[in-house]
Length: 229
Image 1: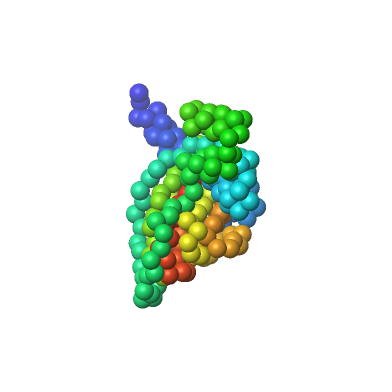
Image 2: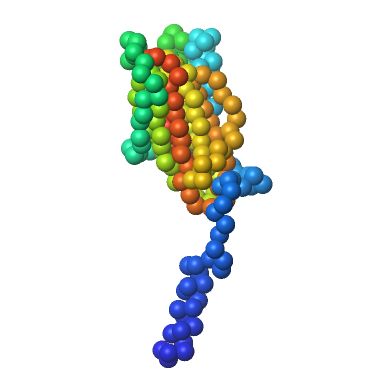
């Protein structure tokens, strides 16, 4: 290979790996015009909402549908690096050792509500044995205990021009507040939620880190799932 040919090859490789111009990383890291396809976190959010409704009405069908949705999400259990701070000194009251609803809890509730209905029991056993067909992927999940009055800060990386999903699902003991900001400190506008469930999806303009601030606004310890795609 001649020197000229080598130079041409190196130039082509650099053109493939480097942007033509420096990308603007000022302002909000959010592409408001972009859209994406909701994935596993959105489906898990829907499962949690149906499960809560099923528990309220002691409805086996709602609880079972929630379980099927949850079983249809490929979950990867992860451990993230986060920082926990005490927002104010609050004497923590004794709370129950609860945890957010997962597939096992949803199936147990569906079985309890179903009684001796063989049709429901057969479907439940099938999900326990085989899961749910057509599973979708892309949900990383971590369980985090958060004392009353404390806050967790997480830094989550997301790719630019790609759909990003964040879900926070508490155990129901206390209200949780969630705020998302980009690396420039700009808040990402998310749909408002009440009490202790949260879901937000957006498309970043560039590759970057986002801070997820989860605050326990009650006095009881709240164990919550943090899900991202």
